[in-house]
Amino acid sequence: MDFSQLAETMLALESTKSRNEMVEVMAWLFKQQPPDEARFSVYLLQGAVAPPHAGIEVGLGEKLVEQAISKAFGYSQKEVQAQYLKSGDLGKVAEKMCSAKRQASLFSEKLTIKKVFQTFYRIATLGGHGSQEAKIGLLAELLNNASPLEAKYIARFPIGRLRLGVGDPTVLDALSFMHKGDKSDREALESAYNKCSDLGLVAESYIRDPESIMKFSMQPLMPVRPALAERLPSPEEIAKRLGKCLVEAKYDGFRLQCHKKGDKVEIFSRRMERMTNMLPEVVSAIRQLKCKDMIFEGEALAYNEQTGEFYPFQQTIQRKRKHGVDEKAAEMPLRLFAFDLLYVDGKDISQEPLHARRKMLEGLIKGSQLIAPSESYITSSADEIEAHFQDFVSRGLEGLMAKDLSAPYTAGARKFAWVKLKRSYRGELSDTVDIAIIGYYAGKGARAQLKFGGVLGAVYDPHTDTFQTIAKVGSGFTEEQMKALEEKLSVIRVKKPNARVRSLMEPTFWVEPKYVITVNADEITRSPQHTCGRDSGDVGYALRFPRMVGDVRTDKRPEDATTVDEIIGMYRSQRRVERNVQEEQ
Ligand code: ATP
Image (cartoon, rainbow, N blue to C red; front, side, top):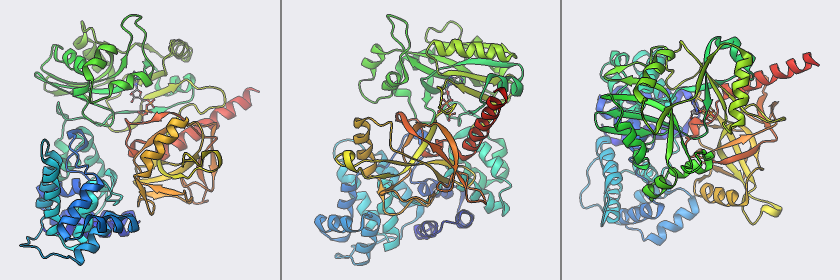
């Protein structure tokens, strides 16, 4: 299919804020396409050339794109830069210069979706001596063959500025819509996606044969979307909801999903990035486990070999690095506390009850020095849950996880199969909230020099694929953090809010939703100023006295921010606790 049709689709997506319209536009595109090409379209529409776990990113700097524009259209680099400074959008610069080319193309070839995808894929995978020049050449060739509209999106793509507002839920709805005319296949599509984490693959299979998605199963070396925990405010509520349950220590390290297929091992982070090369000692411990293939999960923590003490998260996270891996591994070896087994020796066991999975897991890791089962107890008593909670917290752990012994593994979903209970202090929420930064404020007064006054934060609604504001956060930052954030945010500024952002507020600068930070607050309140969970009465939810804790969450994508449903759940349980306190008084 011609790339012009994808460019037209991108234009239609960019021009609407109606989600239904977005779904229809994409469904129309998928309907016209052969299955393998739909896969390319899915990646391209999401600004990528492969699923996140493949670790293949185009990521060209703006300077290189400016050079390619200059080369393709016969303008000097200075002229390209001047135009860019004026419009703030390299896509628009390319569109304009393409329609007023100063040099005629020697020969020109109509662009197809396949050609554009393959060229970007090559750009992403080229390396070594002379690769910069080659990348500029490839991009210039694409631009040279493009119409002005195509040039706009081709220039935006490699710098991550497509701004189409197409999240995973919107693509899943569009796929269902193309076959069914409604969302009735969404759940089945999502379930297939949860098992392979590759939206392109799901699209290709579904378009080829809609029945095929029912047959998707987990495969070692393909990351599974992680199960997530719900919250309950007290041990009593946990005991009431779960009955007899597995209570586990909640470790504050990083979550690892470990895959083994024969001798081949892959390790993925919570956001499904490949971490295999960063963790050599974990890789060899997994390789030694006595089974042919497996997928299991655990939380890794760095510890001091001399004293046996575990390091706090800020230290552990230093193991997430590309360089100096061996030195850091020697300085801060990891322990991996395994808590779930999803697949073993050719069999997807994720639908078996937790107690059976756990038993198999314990058998498989027995004897490993580095991998140990998470500390766990079975109980149905609220008093015992409370006692374990106090014990864990006094040992510096984050709190506890209580798990339903009979539940399957709930890939990609936040369900009551897992419940978290975290330590909190008086006057704080029972859990922190992860917000996606959608804008920021220029500093005033004492902060003028830092050019940073705080951020506008949003939570995510997967039903509508939108980011809804919940707080302006101006405190909790160190001076270093403010400087670092301003640096990060200033390069992703955009003139108008991203199509997925719902906001009644106007920050000094809008930014692409990219970074997530964790905030604590005194409580959740109702507020007409914020769009989070806004109901017909025009009242949303807001955080009272929010402050940043920790650092930027590199393990979360904006879509992994706390969800609107979670905020509403937290608000309700806060009300329940308030009522109980009042009754006790
Ligand atoms: P979430 O993962 O729920 O979006 P989050 O990343 O902020 O939120 P928490 O809310 O603190 O994390 O709790 C869930 C996380 O706790 C898991 O993703 C996992 O990394 C970690 N964890 C620590 N110990 C355990 C355990 N025993 N079982 C499951 N998860 C655990």
